[in-house]
Length: 257
Length: 282
Image 1 (tube, each protein chain N blue to C red):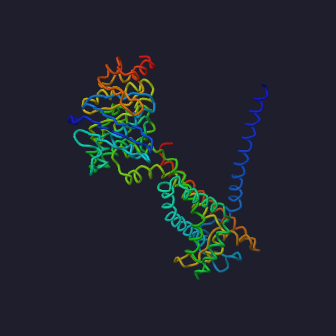
Image 2: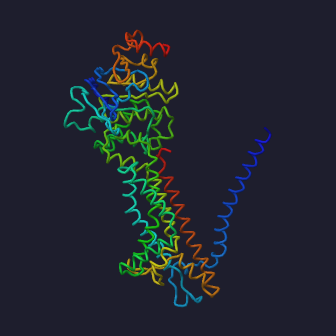
Protein backbone atom coordinates (compact mmCIF):
# COMPACT_ATOMS: atom_id res chain seq x y z
CA UNK A 1 0.00 0.00 0.00
CA UNK A 2 1.39 3.36 -0.96
CA UNK A 3 1.81 5.91 1.78
CA UNK A 4 0.97 9.55 1.32
CA UNK A 5 4.20 11.54 0.87
CA UNK A 6 5.09 13.88 3.69
CA UNK A 7 3.30 17.11 2.92
CA UNK A 8 2.19 18.80 6.12
CA UNK A 9 2.59 22.55 5.93
CA UNK A 10 2.77 25.15 8.69
CA UNK A 11 -0.14 27.46 9.43
CA UNK A 12 0.45 31.12 10.17
CA UNK A 13 -2.24 33.42 11.49
CA UNK A 14 -1.65 37.14 11.04
CA UNK A 15 -3.88 39.63 12.85
CA UNK A 16 -6.83 37.28 12.42
CA UNK A 17 -10.06 38.94 13.48
CA UNK A 18 -13.58 37.58 13.51
CA UNK A 19 -16.91 39.19 14.29
CA UNK A 20 -20.33 37.63 14.63
CA UNK A 21 -22.51 40.62 13.80
CA UNK A 22 -21.11 43.45 15.94
CA UNK A 23 -19.56 41.14 18.51
CA UNK A 24 -15.81 40.66 18.18
CA UNK A 25 -14.90 37.01 18.71
CA UNK A 26 -11.24 37.00 17.69
CA UNK A 27 -9.30 40.21 18.40
CA UNK A 28 -6.18 39.96 16.34
CA UNK A 29 -4.64 36.51 16.56
CA UNK A 30 -0.97 36.00 15.64
CA UNK A 31 0.10 32.39 15.86
CA UNK A 32 2.26 29.73 14.28
CA UNK A 33 1.29 26.10 14.00
CA UNK A 34 4.37 24.20 12.88
CA UNK A 35 4.27 21.53 10.18
CA UNK A 36 3.94 17.90 11.23
CA UNK A 37 3.48 18.73 14.89
CA UNK A 38 0.45 18.69 17.14
CA UNK A 39 -0.60 22.10 18.36
CA UNK A 40 -3.11 22.16 21.19
CA UNK A 41 -5.40 25.13 21.62
CA UNK A 42 -6.66 25.47 25.17
CA UNK A 43 -8.61 28.05 27.13
CA UNK A 44 -11.92 28.62 28.90
CA UNK A 45 -15.24 28.10 27.12
CA UNK A 46 -16.21 30.93 24.82
CA UNK A 47 -12.65 32.18 24.38
CA UNK A 48 -12.79 31.70 20.62
CA UNK A 49 -10.86 28.41 20.26
CA UNK A 50 -13.37 26.72 17.97
CA UNK A 51 -13.99 29.94 16.06
CA UNK A 52 -10.28 30.22 15.35
CA UNK A 53 -10.24 26.65 14.09
CA UNK A 54 -13.22 27.35 11.86
CA UNK A 55 -11.45 30.38 10.40
CA UNK A 56 -8.56 28.20 9.25
CA UNK A 57 -10.69 26.13 6.89
CA UNK A 58 -13.14 28.95 6.14
CA UNK A 59 -16.10 27.35 7.89
CA UNK A 60 -16.59 30.38 10.16
CA UNK A 61 -18.05 32.42 7.33
CA UNK A 62 -20.97 29.96 7.05
CA UNK A 63 -22.44 31.47 10.22
CA UNK A 64 -24.82 34.26 9.22
CA UNK A 65 -23.34 37.65 10.08
CA UNK A 66 -19.76 36.40 10.41
CA UNK A 67 -16.95 38.63 9.15
CA UNK A 68 -13.27 37.74 8.95
CA UNK A 69 -10.23 40.02 8.63
CA UNK A 70 -6.49 39.32 8.65
CA UNK A 71 -4.78 36.40 7.00
CA UNK A 72 -4.47 32.65 7.41
CA UNK A 73 -1.45 31.22 5.62
CA UNK A 74 -1.63 27.52 4.90
CA UNK A 75 1.90 26.85 3.80
CA UNK A 76 2.62 29.92 1.72
CA UNK A 77 -0.89 30.62 0.39
CA UNK A 78 -3.44 32.70 2.18
CA UNK A 79 -6.80 30.98 2.60
CA UNK A 80 -8.54 34.35 2.30
CA UNK A 81 -6.64 35.64 -0.73
CA UNK A 82 -8.62 36.89 -3.70
CA UNK A 83 -9.47 34.18 -6.19
CA UNK A 84 -8.89 31.31 -3.77
CA UNK A 85 -11.27 28.39 -4.27
CA UNK A 86 -13.05 27.87 -0.93
CA UNK A 87 -13.77 24.22 -1.64
CA UNK A 88 -10.05 23.65 -2.28
CA UNK A 89 -9.14 25.30 1.04
CA UNK A 90 -11.61 23.03 2.82
CA UNK A 91 -10.24 19.99 1.04
CA UNK A 92 -6.69 20.82 2.12
CA UNK A 93 -7.72 21.55 5.69
CA UNK A 94 -9.74 18.73 7.24
CA UNK A 95 -11.99 19.40 10.23
CA UNK A 96 -13.04 16.69 12.64
CA UNK A 97 -15.95 17.86 14.78
CA UNK A 98 -16.72 17.17 18.40
CA UNK A 99 -19.62 14.87 17.69
CA UNK A 100 -19.20 12.29 14.93
CA UNK A 101 -21.56 13.04 12.05
CA UNK A 102 -21.66 10.12 9.61
CA UNK A 103 -23.29 11.03 6.31
CA UNK A 104 -26.50 9.12 5.45
CA UNK A 105 -24.74 6.44 3.38
CA UNK A 106 -22.72 3.26 3.92
CA UNK A 107 -19.36 3.16 5.68
CA UNK A 108 -17.57 2.85 2.34
CA UNK A 109 -19.53 5.71 0.76
CA UNK A 110 -18.85 7.93 3.75
CA UNK A 111 -15.11 7.67 3.15
CA UNK A 112 -15.47 7.76 -0.65
CA UNK A 113 -17.72 10.84 -0.48
CA UNK A 114 -14.89 13.39 -0.51
CA UNK A 115 -12.82 11.77 -3.30
CA UNK A 116 -15.98 11.37 -5.41
CA UNK A 117 -16.85 15.05 -4.91
CA UNK A 118 -13.37 15.91 -6.12
CA UNK A 119 -13.80 13.92 -9.27
CA UNK A 120 -12.45 10.40 -8.65
CA UNK A 121 -14.71 7.86 -10.35
CA UNK A 122 -12.50 4.81 -10.85
CA UNK A 123 -13.77 1.99 -8.61
CA UNK A 124 -10.39 0.43 -7.89
CA UNK A 125 -8.84 3.77 -7.13
CA UNK A 126 -11.71 4.64 -4.79
CA UNK A 127 -11.37 1.31 -3.06
CA UNK A 128 -7.67 1.78 -2.43
CA UNK A 129 -8.26 5.32 -1.15
CA UNK A 130 -10.95 4.08 1.23
CA UNK A 131 -8.77 1.26 2.50
CA UNK A 132 -5.81 3.58 3.01
CA UNK A 133 -7.89 6.21 4.81
CA UNK A 134 -9.57 3.66 7.09
CA UNK A 135 -6.20 2.09 7.84
CA UNK A 136 -4.70 5.47 8.74
CA UNK A 137 -7.65 6.13 11.03
CA UNK A 138 -7.12 2.72 12.66
CA UNK A 139 -10.54 1.44 11.65
CA UNK A 140 -9.87 -0.82 8.65
CA UNK A 141 -9.66 -4.09 10.56
CA UNK A 142 -12.88 -3.39 12.40
CA UNK A 143 -14.98 -2.57 9.33
CA UNK A 144 -13.38 -4.39 6.39
CA UNK A 145 -16.12 -7.03 6.45
CA UNK A 146 -19.00 -4.59 6.64
CA UNK A 147 -18.09 -1.71 4.41
CA UNK A 148 -21.65 -1.56 3.07
CA UNK A 149 -23.29 -1.49 6.47
CA UNK A 150 -24.75 1.66 7.99
CA UNK A 151 -22.26 3.83 9.90
CA UNK A 152 -24.84 3.91 12.68
CA UNK A 153 -24.05 0.29 13.48
CA UNK A 154 -20.62 1.48 14.69
CA UNK A 155 -19.88 2.63 18.22
CA UNK A 156 -19.48 6.37 18.81
CA UNK A 157 -15.71 5.96 19.04
CA UNK A 158 -15.63 4.04 15.76
CA UNK A 159 -17.86 6.67 14.16
CA UNK A 160 -15.39 9.36 15.19
CA UNK A 161 -12.54 7.42 13.57
CA UNK A 162 -14.76 7.00 10.49
CA UNK A 163 -15.11 10.78 10.34
CA UNK A 164 -11.34 11.01 10.65
CA UNK A 165 -10.95 8.55 7.76
CA UNK A 166 -13.43 10.58 5.73
CA UNK A 167 -11.29 13.66 6.30
CA UNK A 168 -8.09 11.80 5.38
CA UNK A 169 -9.53 10.45 2.14
CA UNK A 170 -9.39 13.88 0.44
CA UNK A 171 -5.63 14.04 1.14
CA UNK A 172 -5.48 17.17 3.25
CA UNK A 173 -2.29 18.90 4.43
CA UNK A 174 -3.73 19.98 7.73
CA UNK A 175 -6.07 18.28 10.22
CA UNK A 176 -8.12 20.34 12.63
CA UNK A 177 -9.73 18.59 15.59
CA UNK A 178 -12.46 20.38 17.53
CA UNK A 179 -12.61 18.56 20.88
CA UNK A 180 -12.55 15.23 19.05
CA UNK A 181 -12.78 13.13 22.18
CA UNK A 182 -15.24 15.18 24.21
CA UNK A 183 -18.15 12.84 23.50
CA UNK A 184 -16.15 9.61 23.74
CA UNK A 185 -15.50 7.20 26.58
CA UNK A 186 -11.90 7.13 27.92
CA UNK A 187 -10.89 4.01 25.96
CA UNK A 188 -12.20 5.32 22.64
CA UNK A 189 -10.67 8.71 23.42
CA UNK A 190 -7.26 7.15 23.97
CA UNK A 191 -7.64 5.34 20.68
CA UNK A 192 -8.29 8.62 18.84
CA UNK A 193 -5.32 10.22 20.62
CA UNK A 194 -3.08 7.42 19.39
CA UNK A 195 -4.29 7.95 15.83
CA UNK A 196 -3.53 11.66 16.08
CA UNK A 197 -0.01 10.91 17.30
CA UNK A 198 0.50 8.56 14.37
CA UNK A 199 -0.91 11.10 11.93
CA UNK A 200 1.33 13.97 12.92
CA UNK A 201 4.19 12.35 11.01
CA UNK A 202 2.38 13.30 7.83
CA UNK A 203 0.00 16.12 8.73
CA UNK A 204 -0.03 19.35 10.62
CA UNK A 205 -2.48 18.76 13.47
CA UNK A 206 -4.31 21.38 15.49
CA UNK A 207 -6.50 20.20 18.33
CA UNK A 208 -8.88 22.22 20.46
CA UNK A 209 -9.29 20.55 23.82
CA UNK A 210 -10.56 21.18 27.32
CA UNK A 211 -8.55 18.29 28.59
CA UNK A 212 -5.14 19.56 29.71
CA UNK A 213 -3.89 16.04 30.41
CA UNK A 214 -4.71 15.21 26.85
CA UNK A 215 -2.92 18.32 25.59
CA UNK A 216 0.17 17.27 27.56
CA UNK A 217 0.00 13.73 26.21
CA UNK A 218 -0.18 14.58 22.55
CA UNK A 219 0.77 18.21 21.88
CA UNK A 220 4.17 19.58 20.92
CA UNK A 221 3.01 23.16 21.00
CA UNK A 222 0.27 24.86 22.92
CA UNK A 223 -1.70 28.04 22.47
CA UNK A 224 -3.62 29.45 25.40
CA UNK A 225 -6.51 31.71 24.47
CA UNK A 226 -8.46 34.14 26.58
CA UNK A 227 -11.38 36.31 25.45
CA UNK A 228 -10.54 36.16 21.77
CA UNK A 229 -6.83 36.79 22.19
CA UNK A 230 -3.77 34.63 22.62
CA UNK A 231 -2.50 34.91 26.16
CA UNK A 232 0.44 32.61 25.71
CA UNK A 233 1.97 30.23 23.19
CA UNK A 234 5.03 28.02 22.98
CA UNK A 235 6.19 24.46 23.58
CA UNK A 236 3.39 22.52 25.26
CA UNK A 237 5.39 21.57 28.34
CA UNK A 238 6.29 25.17 28.98
CA UNK A 239 2.81 26.65 28.42
CA UNK A 240 0.98 23.94 30.32
CA UNK A 241 3.43 23.24 33.15
CA UNK A 242 5.01 26.58 33.86
CA UNK A 243 2.86 29.30 32.34
CA UNK A 244 3.98 32.90 32.64
CA UNK A 245 0.64 34.58 32.04
CA UNK A 246 -1.71 35.08 34.98
CA UNK A 247 -4.80 33.83 33.08
CA UNK A 248 -3.04 30.65 32.00
CA UNK A 249 -1.77 30.15 35.54
CA UNK A 250 -5.26 30.48 36.99
CA UNK A 251 -6.82 28.20 34.40
CA UNK A 252 -4.23 25.49 34.84
CA UNK A 253 -4.30 25.70 38.63
CA UNK A 254 -8.08 25.43 38.49
CA UNK A 255 -7.95 22.25 36.46
CA UNK A 256 -5.56 20.68 38.93
CA UNK A 257 -2.71 19.26 36.86
CA UNK B 1 -47.86 6.15 48.80
CA UNK B 2 -49.82 2.98 48.01
CA UNK B 3 -52.01 5.13 45.77
CA UNK B 4 -49.24 5.97 43.27
CA UNK B 5 -48.70 2.41 42.15
CA UNK B 6 -52.43 1.80 41.89
CA UNK B 7 -52.86 4.92 39.78
CA UNK B 8 -50.00 3.81 37.57
CA UNK B 9 -51.61 0.41 37.10
CA UNK B 10 -55.04 1.86 36.32
CA UNK B 11 -53.46 4.28 33.88
CA UNK B 12 -51.59 1.51 32.10
CA UNK B 13 -54.66 -0.70 31.90
CA UNK B 14 -56.73 2.19 30.55
CA UNK B 15 -54.16 3.05 27.89
CA UNK B 16 -53.93 -0.58 26.86
CA UNK B 17 -57.70 -0.89 26.62
CA UNK B 18 -58.02 2.21 24.44
CA UNK B 19 -55.16 1.06 22.17
CA UNK B 20 -56.76 -2.37 21.83
CA UNK B 21 -60.15 -0.89 20.95
CA UNK B 22 -58.60 1.44 18.34
CA UNK B 23 -56.74 -1.44 16.76
CA UNK B 24 -59.79 -3.69 17.03
CA UNK B 25 -61.96 -1.02 15.44
CA UNK B 26 -59.61 -0.65 12.47
CA UNK B 27 -59.32 -4.38 12.11
CA UNK B 28 -63.09 -4.83 12.17
CA UNK B 29 -63.50 -2.29 9.34
CA UNK B 30 -61.08 -4.26 7.20
CA UNK B 31 -62.56 -7.62 8.24
CA UNK B 32 -66.11 -6.43 7.57
CA UNK B 33 -65.14 -5.08 4.13
CA UNK B 34 -63.38 -8.32 3.32
CA UNK B 35 -66.29 -10.46 4.53
CA UNK B 36 -68.88 -8.51 2.54
CA UNK B 37 -66.74 -7.94 -0.53
CA UNK B 38 -64.69 -11.08 -0.97
CA UNK B 39 -67.60 -13.10 -2.41
CA UNK B 40 -68.21 -10.63 -5.20
CA UNK B 41 -64.61 -10.05 -6.31
CA UNK B 42 -63.83 -12.19 -9.35
CA UNK B 43 -61.18 -12.05 -12.04
CA UNK B 44 -63.81 -10.74 -14.47
CA UNK B 45 -64.73 -7.95 -12.12
CA UNK B 46 -61.12 -6.78 -11.94
CA UNK B 47 -60.32 -6.98 -15.63
CA UNK B 48 -63.51 -6.07 -17.50
CA UNK B 49 -65.37 -2.83 -17.99
CA UNK B 50 -69.07 -2.82 -17.11
CA UNK B 51 -71.47 -4.40 -19.58
CA UNK B 52 -74.61 -2.39 -20.48
CA UNK B 53 -76.58 -4.29 -17.87
CA UNK B 54 -73.92 -4.06 -15.12
CA UNK B 55 -75.87 -1.63 -12.97
CA UNK B 56 -78.91 -3.86 -13.21
CA UNK B 57 -77.00 -6.87 -11.99
CA UNK B 58 -75.59 -7.92 -15.34
CA UNK B 59 -72.02 -8.84 -16.31
CA UNK B 60 -68.77 -6.98 -16.67
CA UNK B 61 -66.48 -5.48 -14.07
CA UNK B 62 -64.98 -2.35 -12.59
CA UNK B 63 -61.71 -2.12 -14.52
CA UNK B 64 -62.78 1.35 -15.65
CA UNK B 65 -62.76 2.60 -12.07
CA UNK B 66 -59.63 0.73 -11.02
CA UNK B 67 -57.61 2.11 -13.93
CA UNK B 68 -59.31 5.49 -13.59
CA UNK B 69 -58.55 5.83 -9.88
CA UNK B 70 -54.96 4.67 -10.31
CA UNK B 71 -54.33 7.11 -13.21
CA UNK B 72 -56.05 9.97 -11.47
CA UNK B 73 -54.30 9.54 -8.12
CA UNK B 74 -50.90 8.93 -9.77
CA UNK B 75 -51.29 11.98 -12.00
CA UNK B 76 -52.46 14.13 -9.12
CA UNK B 77 -49.49 12.99 -7.02
CA UNK B 78 -47.09 13.87 -9.86
CA UNK B 79 -48.61 17.33 -10.20
CA UNK B 80 -48.52 17.83 -6.44
CA UNK B 81 -44.85 16.72 -6.39
CA UNK B 82 -43.92 19.02 -9.27
CA UNK B 83 -45.36 21.99 -7.43
CA UNK B 84 -44.76 20.81 -3.88
CA UNK B 85 -41.08 19.85 -3.95
CA UNK B 86 -39.78 23.27 -5.09
CA UNK B 87 -42.14 24.89 -2.60
CA UNK B 88 -40.85 22.71 0.26
CA UNK B 89 -37.23 23.33 -0.79
CA UNK B 90 -37.87 27.06 -0.80
CA UNK B 91 -39.42 26.89 2.69
CA UNK B 92 -36.56 24.78 4.02
CA UNK B 93 -33.66 26.74 2.52
CA UNK B 94 -34.10 30.33 1.36
CA UNK B 95 -37.18 31.20 3.39
CA UNK B 96 -35.96 29.34 6.48
CA UNK B 97 -37.34 31.00 9.61
CA UNK B 98 -38.85 33.93 7.72
CA UNK B 99 -42.36 35.32 8.29
CA UNK B 100 -43.33 34.34 4.77
CA UNK B 101 -42.45 30.72 5.51
CA UNK B 102 -44.60 30.74 8.64
CA UNK B 103 -47.47 32.25 6.66
CA UNK B 104 -47.16 29.62 3.94
CA UNK B 105 -47.03 26.85 6.55
CA UNK B 106 -50.15 28.17 8.27
CA UNK B 107 -52.01 28.37 4.93
CA UNK B 108 -50.96 24.85 4.01
CA UNK B 109 -52.22 23.57 7.34
CA UNK B 110 -55.54 25.30 6.71
CA UNK B 111 -55.69 23.84 3.20
CA UNK B 112 -54.98 20.42 4.75
CA UNK B 113 -58.02 20.86 6.97
CA UNK B 114 -60.38 22.12 4.26
CA UNK B 115 -63.04 19.45 3.54
CA UNK B 116 -62.51 17.81 0.17
CA UNK B 117 -66.01 18.76 -0.99
CA UNK B 118 -64.96 22.42 -0.71
CA UNK B 119 -61.84 21.73 -2.76
CA UNK B 120 -64.07 19.85 -5.21
CA UNK B 121 -66.46 22.81 -5.46
CA UNK B 122 -63.52 25.14 -6.07
CA UNK B 123 -62.17 22.83 -8.79
CA UNK B 124 -65.63 22.69 -10.34
CA UNK B 125 -66.02 26.49 -10.33
CA UNK B 126 -62.59 26.92 -11.87
CA UNK B 127 -63.40 24.28 -14.48
CA UNK B 128 -66.62 26.03 -15.49
CA UNK B 129 -64.85 29.40 -15.58
CA UNK B 130 -62.15 27.99 -17.84
CA UNK B 131 -64.79 26.37 -20.04
CA UNK B 132 -63.53 22.83 -19.46
CA UNK B 133 -65.52 19.63 -19.03
CA UNK B 134 -65.17 17.06 -16.25
CA UNK B 135 -62.13 15.03 -17.23
CA UNK B 136 -59.10 13.12 -15.99
CA UNK B 137 -57.01 16.31 -16.19
CA UNK B 138 -59.40 18.49 -14.19
CA UNK B 139 -59.82 15.68 -11.65
CA UNK B 140 -56.05 15.38 -11.32
CA UNK B 141 -55.70 19.11 -10.77
CA UNK B 142 -58.36 19.14 -8.07
CA UNK B 143 -57.00 16.10 -6.26
CA UNK B 144 -53.47 17.57 -6.55
CA UNK B 145 -54.76 20.55 -4.59
CA UNK B 146 -55.92 18.10 -1.94
CA UNK B 147 -52.54 16.35 -1.87
CA UNK B 148 -50.34 19.42 -2.02
CA UNK B 149 -50.39 20.33 1.69
CA UNK B 150 -49.58 16.73 2.66
CA UNK B 151 -46.55 16.65 0.38
CA UNK B 152 -45.21 20.13 1.15
CA UNK B 153 -45.63 19.85 4.90
CA UNK B 154 -44.10 16.37 5.16
CA UNK B 155 -41.01 17.34 3.14
CA UNK B 156 -40.77 20.67 4.95
CA UNK B 157 -41.01 18.93 8.31
CA UNK B 158 -38.36 16.35 7.47
CA UNK B 159 -36.03 19.06 6.14
CA UNK B 160 -36.32 20.91 9.41
CA UNK B 161 -34.98 17.90 11.26
CA UNK B 162 -31.76 17.65 9.21
CA UNK B 163 -28.96 18.45 11.65
CA UNK B 164 -26.82 21.40 10.57
CA UNK B 165 -23.73 19.36 11.52
CA UNK B 166 -24.48 17.09 8.59
CA UNK B 167 -24.40 19.98 6.17
CA UNK B 168 -21.19 21.26 7.73
CA UNK B 169 -19.55 17.85 7.58
CA UNK B 170 -20.10 17.80 3.83
CA UNK B 171 -18.99 21.41 3.29
CA UNK B 172 -15.87 20.80 5.41
CA UNK B 173 -14.78 18.13 2.91
CA UNK B 174 -14.82 20.71 0.15
CA UNK B 175 -18.29 20.01 -1.23
CA UNK B 176 -20.29 22.88 -2.68
CA UNK B 177 -23.75 23.83 -1.40
CA UNK B 178 -25.36 22.18 -4.43
CA UNK B 179 -23.41 18.93 -3.94
CA UNK B 180 -24.33 18.95 -0.26
CA UNK B 181 -28.01 19.49 -1.06
CA UNK B 182 -28.25 16.75 -3.68
CA UNK B 183 -25.96 14.13 -2.17
CA UNK B 184 -26.46 14.53 1.57
CA UNK B 185 -29.56 16.55 2.45
CA UNK B 186 -31.74 14.89 -0.21
CA UNK B 187 -30.61 11.45 0.93
CA UNK B 188 -31.36 12.32 4.52
CA UNK B 189 -34.83 13.61 3.59
CA UNK B 190 -35.75 10.89 1.11
CA UNK B 191 -37.45 8.39 3.48
CA UNK B 192 -39.69 11.07 4.95
CA UNK B 193 -40.45 12.52 1.54
CA UNK B 194 -41.42 9.14 0.11
CA UNK B 195 -43.66 8.39 3.08
CA UNK B 196 -45.34 11.78 2.70
CA UNK B 197 -45.85 11.25 -1.02
CA UNK B 198 -47.47 7.85 -0.57
CA UNK B 199 -49.63 9.26 2.21
CA UNK B 200 -50.76 11.94 -0.22
CA UNK B 201 -51.42 9.29 -2.88
CA UNK B 202 -53.57 7.41 -0.37
CA UNK B 203 -55.53 10.56 0.41
CA UNK B 204 -55.99 11.23 -3.30
CA UNK B 205 -57.15 7.77 -4.34
CA UNK B 206 -59.66 7.47 -1.53
CA UNK B 207 -61.45 10.76 -2.03
CA UNK B 208 -64.91 10.89 -3.58
CA UNK B 209 -65.98 14.47 -3.01
CA UNK B 210 -63.18 16.17 -4.93
CA UNK B 211 -63.69 14.08 -8.07
CA UNK B 212 -67.48 13.96 -8.04
CA UNK B 213 -67.90 17.23 -9.92
CA UNK B 214 -64.55 17.41 -11.68
CA UNK B 215 -63.69 14.00 -13.08
CA UNK B 216 -67.06 12.84 -14.32
CA UNK B 217 -67.86 9.15 -14.61
CA UNK B 218 -67.74 6.70 -17.47
CA UNK B 219 -67.90 3.01 -18.20
CA UNK B 220 -64.83 3.20 -20.42
CA UNK B 221 -61.16 3.13 -19.47
CA UNK B 222 -59.76 6.65 -20.06
CA UNK B 223 -57.75 7.07 -23.27
CA UNK B 224 -56.70 10.67 -22.92
CA UNK B 225 -56.41 13.43 -20.32
CA UNK B 226 -59.55 15.09 -21.60
CA UNK B 227 -61.72 11.97 -21.22
CA UNK B 228 -64.03 11.74 -18.24
CA UNK B 229 -62.88 9.08 -15.81
CA UNK B 230 -64.49 6.66 -13.36
CA UNK B 231 -63.11 6.38 -9.82
CA UNK B 232 -63.51 3.71 -7.17
CA UNK B 233 -64.96 5.89 -4.38
CA UNK B 234 -67.68 7.20 -6.72
CA UNK B 235 -68.35 3.70 -7.99
CA UNK B 236 -68.92 2.57 -4.41
CA UNK B 237 -71.23 5.50 -3.80
CA UNK B 238 -73.33 4.89 -6.93
CA UNK B 239 -73.57 1.14 -6.41
CA UNK B 240 -74.61 1.48 -2.77
CA UNK B 241 -77.50 3.64 -3.89
CA UNK B 242 -78.76 1.01 -6.31
CA UNK B 243 -82.09 -0.69 -5.64
CA UNK B 244 -80.68 -3.95 -7.08
CA UNK B 245 -79.35 -6.14 -4.29
CA UNK B 246 -76.61 -7.71 -6.42
CA UNK B 247 -75.24 -4.30 -7.36
CA UNK B 248 -75.17 -3.23 -3.72
CA UNK B 249 -73.20 -6.37 -2.91
CA UNK B 250 -70.65 -5.47 -5.59
CA UNK B 251 -70.13 -2.10 -3.93
CA UNK B 252 -68.44 -3.96 -1.09
CA UNK B 253 -66.23 -5.68 -3.62
CA UNK B 254 -65.17 -2.27 -4.92
CA UNK B 255 -64.60 -1.17 -1.32
CA UNK B 256 -62.32 -4.12 -0.81
CA UNK B 257 -60.35 -3.37 -3.98
CA UNK B 258 -59.90 0.25 -2.87
CA UNK B 259 -58.85 -0.83 0.62
CA UNK B 260 -56.33 -3.27 -0.84
CA UNK B 261 -54.83 -0.60 -3.11
CA UNK B 262 -54.42 1.74 -0.15
CA UNK B 263 -53.01 -1.07 2.01
CA UNK B 264 -50.55 -2.05 -0.74
CA UNK B 265 -49.49 1.60 -1.00
CA UNK B 266 -48.78 1.85 2.74
CA UNK B 267 -46.95 -1.45 2.69
CA UNK B 268 -44.85 -0.26 -0.24
CA UNK B 269 -44.13 3.00 1.55
CA UNK B 270 -43.02 1.04 4.60
CA UNK B 271 -40.68 -1.15 2.51
CA UNK B 272 -39.27 1.82 0.62
CA UNK B 273 -38.79 3.63 3.92
CA UNK B 274 -36.89 0.70 5.42
CA UNK B 275 -34.65 0.52 2.37
CA UNK B 276 -33.97 4.25 2.14
CA UNK B 277 -33.63 4.82 5.86
CA UNK B 278 -30.87 2.25 6.33
CA UNK B 279 -28.09 4.81 6.59
CA UNK B 280 -30.07 7.78 7.79
CA UNK B 281 -29.29 9.20 11.21
CA UNK B 282 -32.26 8.98 13.54
